[in-house]
Image (cartoon, rainbow, N blue to C red; front, side):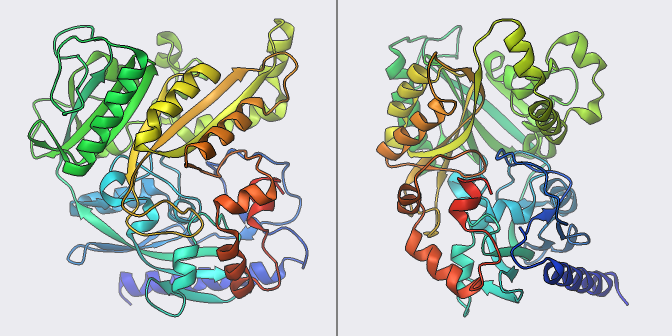
Length: 482
């Protein structure tokens, strides 16, 4: 038996074990995956019922160098997938920022990264999926077979239609290094750090109002995404960081065969701080893909990990997003931070952990609102262009959107309800014709929710693939937190 045949046999055994596990869960009991890690921020009480056994569904089954595809089990992390594909000079077309995000999770729960202006969201590189549906059957869904409705309806369904067991995804070739340019918008602090005008040409040390910085950044995003180039150089990756109303950077990445040096942000140095301090940089392609993970973007500062003394003592192997996520979950259960705030006489704080998509032309309006009403920095920007229409996350095909990500806490104004800021954000995103990811808290009414996430399409899918209602309804899972 070859390694490929052995892997296929093990995969089939794992699938049958999961089907038996599903059948053994009593009718009416909640169905949840038994998994060690999570990147969701919809916290809930630990389940007492046994979880769905997905053991054995966490491997890369095959990398086809000639076809530029990979067959991957649903619980495989992108960390493991990247480790399997880079030796072939290939990478997934979109690699979400955090190492423990799984292939199945990125498809059913969405994901994004700096290649999304070229390749859309991670599910857009999926060629076919084996899905165990709510009725316990396993079907193969592609964009043009009898289960194409499930293929297009699966993204953003969050496990309420079924679970991806195997995915075949498209890969793309890479070069060994990525050259970065950090281009500032707003008042400059030195040569080459000026804003970029709406024509995409580098400006001098021009200042301007806060609105000008956001408007110029939005105009540049639109032009760079359309041309896949900046100042005559190809752009393979683009994302941005907002440090304040007048300090916005676009980071433009370009594959390159050689590099005069490479930076390392897995030890003492901090990647997001380098954006403010360097005009250019070079990373290996591996370190570029995981540049955000060692500090969970910038959120490691909540644990003191960015203090030089603590950073030196904190083991490198624990500078990881999944470690920080576990610390947040522990703090939420133990209420340590909340108790300290009460002891110090500080007001209660609201978790504001969200990713939203707004049309690029509405980005300045959203940032103006965000600086005025929320006041949290930094903020992440990531452009994307959907290549197809996906019913449960209905972005307009071919239009440039910008994902805005913000993750932290803000003090609650006196007398306000605990979800005050999150509700403001939901209303503003809707007013700007945007959409909101569902990995975190949501507060929509049922009618509002289904207007945003295509209720008729979802109900039809639910009736077809989960007619007995064994899996949760999407609204109940993502808003009511059941």
